[in-house]
Length: 69
View 1 (cartoon, rainbow, N blue to C red):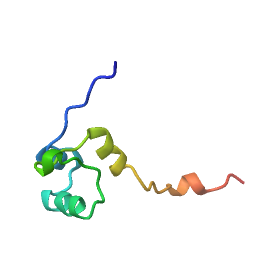
View 2 (spheres, rainbow, N blue to C red; view 1 turned 135 degrees about the horizontal axis):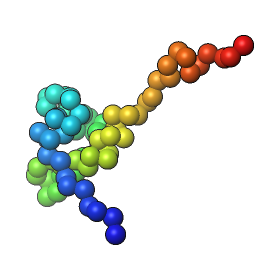
View 3 (tube, rainbow, N blue to C red; view 1 turned 90 degrees about the horizontal axis):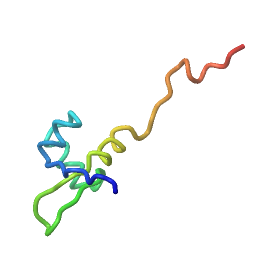
View 4 (cartoon, helix red, strand yellow; view 1 turned 180 degrees about the horizontal axis):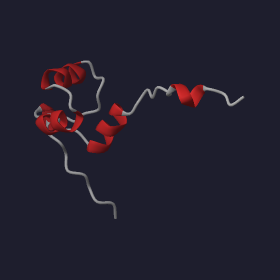
């Protein structure tokens, strides 16, 4: 059985991501970051989903796109 993740609060999400509290709330309002609001109250996050959010839209480094002649 998989161990359930502890839900993160907004403050914990700020600490985990390094994003500002204001920016986290902006992303929540714009529905650009995955979050949960049980009973329409406090906001919670899954750490794994925050990691996916942070590591989306990867940009390749120069050396990765250079062809070997």
